[in-house]
Amino acid sequence: MYSKNEIIDILKDNTIDKEIFSLADSIRKKYVGDEVHLRGLIEFSNICKCNCKYCGLQFSNNKIERYRISPENIVLYAKKAVDMGYKTVVLQSGEDAFFKTEILCEIIEKIKNLGVALTLSIGERPYNDYKAFKQAGADRYLIRIETTDRNLYKSLHPNMSFENRLRCLDDLKNLGYEVGTGCLVGLPEQSLESLADDILFFKKIDADMIGIGPFIPHPQTPLANSQIGDFNLALKVMALTRIILKNINIPATTAMETLNPNGRIIALQSGANVVMPNVTTTEYRAKYEIYPGKICINENPEKCRNCIGAKIKSIGRTVSEDYGFRVR
Ligand code: SAH
Image (cartoon, rainbow, N blue to C red; front, side, top):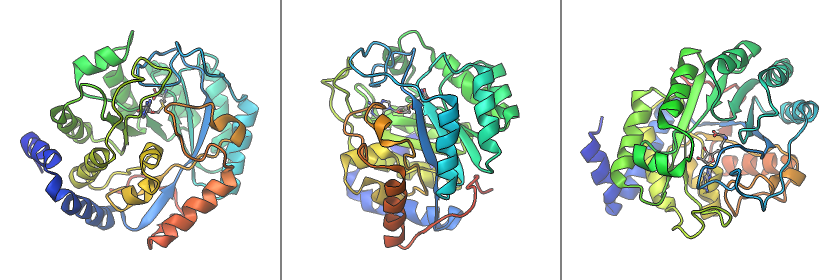
């Protein structure tokens, strides 16, 4: 186990990158094997009450066209994902008040009846909501801490609190969810020291999944003119997370592929073992613009499934046939 100072030294030293990526790859192989788990992602609403400064879906962005997929159609898209062979469906959205507890529970129950694992990624909710979603059948929950630097967190999230983010992660763990979190890499004013803290935080809370992506400035946000995150640094934070947390699930994130046309494959060879292809129909893809340059916005779900399947095969890995829960 590395100390904080050792992690910082590794992050600083570009001469050892290859070594770190190949160590992460071998630890991935040893602990979670060669199978890649696919999770079908449904981006069901881009309506959001939050104002996270980096995010294109923020409430104050009045230039994007908002949409909300109806509960019936969400279930329909989930069914299509299952028919395509997905063993996990991920429901992601902005913090959209339309989706009250009962509505979501009904969607969850219907999707669970299709025989898949279900992941939610819908932001901060009270304990009782998380409890109801779990009872309705949800298996996993993704909510990134974004950064563990409290001051930075505060400046990026108006009217939100770091404590509440922690409370969410704690509640989810206590309720028996598989908990996914993660961070952005390359935020303005973010230090290497705080990235080391992020990795140690993932270890401390014993997260089951970690998603790490480079920050990509969105033109309709206050961070429009900030510098873009560094692909290599994001990859290194991800690789170190694999080296330190060992048996967790780590997605090769879509944001990585935005910065490098081969980003997800490189990530799969540097510690990642999960990919989350988009199963939302083409009409909504461009509108779910968290950051600009999102990949595959003109593609359809079938094409994305085939494309990633072929890429995975080309590097000698296989698409998993099981639910892909964390291996212990
Ligand atoms: N509303 C949900 C889902 C958020 S979108 C929630 O709060 O959890 C999923 C992730 O996109 C966020 O957690 C954030 O880390 C990432 N993201 C947002 N804006 C981004 C940007 N400009 N560049 C890269 N990633 C971004």
